[in-house]
Length: 175
Image 1 (cartoon, one colour):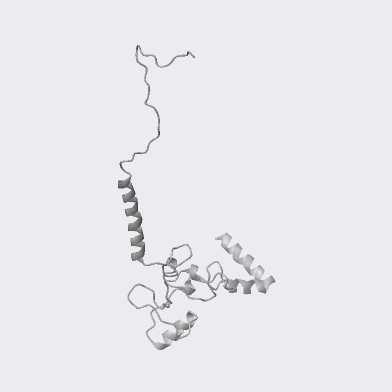
Image 2 (cartoon, rainbow, N blue to C red):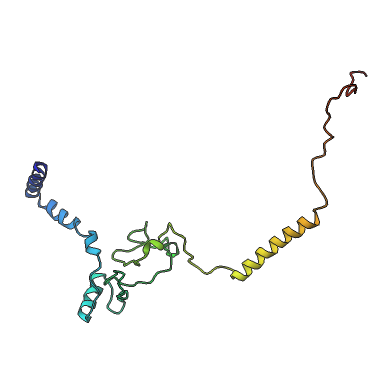
């Protein structure tokens, strides 16, 4: 407890000597996780407007998640399904490591769309039927080659193994 009291006394002395320290401390306290915790689901139009202002959205853009008991509260439904890697890398983002701007709301399931996850940002080049037909073509070609070349055995051409037996000369040192 005495360490806590000493820390508080030190903080008071620093703030008295330099008021900018107090302003910076207060300024840095903004942005805690409690500030971003969703409130209760908006029931009235006034609550809806307040929630839109809280998330820095226009009232016509703000649409909360359905009140189905999952606990999203007044958090805005901002779409999703498009991964972070689909965003422009050369845009001057406020937070370029996340490709986000200040106060930009993110999807409630943002962990599915971050850059370390797989997401299909554009439609595939060919249809799934085409991919399946190519797979069947390659596999049937391999199977046809196997059956066609099955009787033509390939092996390393070596002589038969010679084992010593009594009374048989296997080699001589004569010219």
